[in-house]
Image (tube, rainbow, N blue to C red; front, side, top):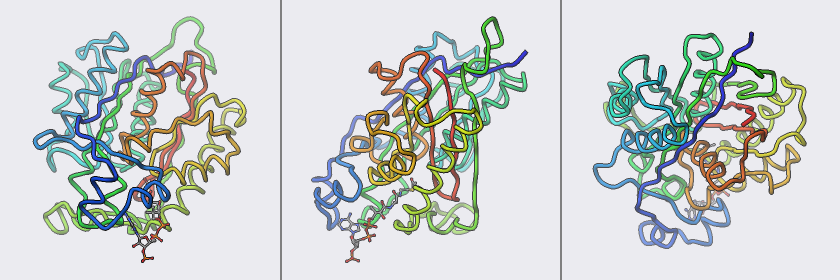
Length: 324
Ligand code: ACO
């Protein structure tokens, strides 16, 4: 008997405050035209003072559980992808665990920056396939606004805050076959590039958190190549082709990266979920936010084949191919 993980609920949360490009132009030397032309971003949501990653993560997870009709006390595993934890320790995941009423099982943070949610899906899927977990919550949640140097126009215009979550359930009953739930996950990292996108600091090196530093052009180049490659890897592993994909739900870093990846994959833009213009880059939250939006508005429906993929600092990158 094979066990599959099925996505049985999605949820999302965005902080109330919206900061437009016009507002950014009052903080740094930039324009709406420059930001839209280079990135596609028009606005971003920014967490309120005192609103932390755990608050965003909890709100998204609570909505995902409600959509799935699952109680927090039924969850065996909670994986929270984040690079912006509330505290250096304990894991932000355990705060979310407590608020959800999940008293058993395990909760931990996973750090793969923008790939954190896709990495989390792979971890949870493997626990479920191994028979160790029946119900998992995977969250991507970030308050990247706290990592930004708000005087650096090269980076501060690119990011936003938010959270998204899914509930996964083991499906080993009648009708389980190769074409149900998560078909496969594929993870990669290449630490030789760790300094192309990093924070200038951390608890061990500077005892601070450090602001984001990025070599944009290099990141761009690697992102397009790696994202197209890992999507093809996932398709090949399942004997499928691009035409089989109903929806590509990529990491929302930048519209030009999305277009470049789509071009390399030869997938039409009508089959790509795009939220970057409204959310900006929310790091680990971007994929589950986009997924929850497209499920919520009925674009992604049961039976659809969905490709989730992301790339982030490290570099880390990965894909998750799922039949909804
Ligand atoms: N407003 C106005 N001008 C700006 C801004 C801004 N916000 N930011 C940079 N510039 C200027 C630069 O200073 C530079 O000026 P100069 O020529 O006088 O030195 C000029 O614009 C061109 O800068 P470039 O860095 O060459 O611009 P580029 O076309 O590469 O676009 C960008 C920059 C948007 C960051 C691009 O490199 C990119 O999209 N990279 C991908 C990075 C990314 O998305 N990272 C997100 C995290 S990684 C991930 O999630 C996968």
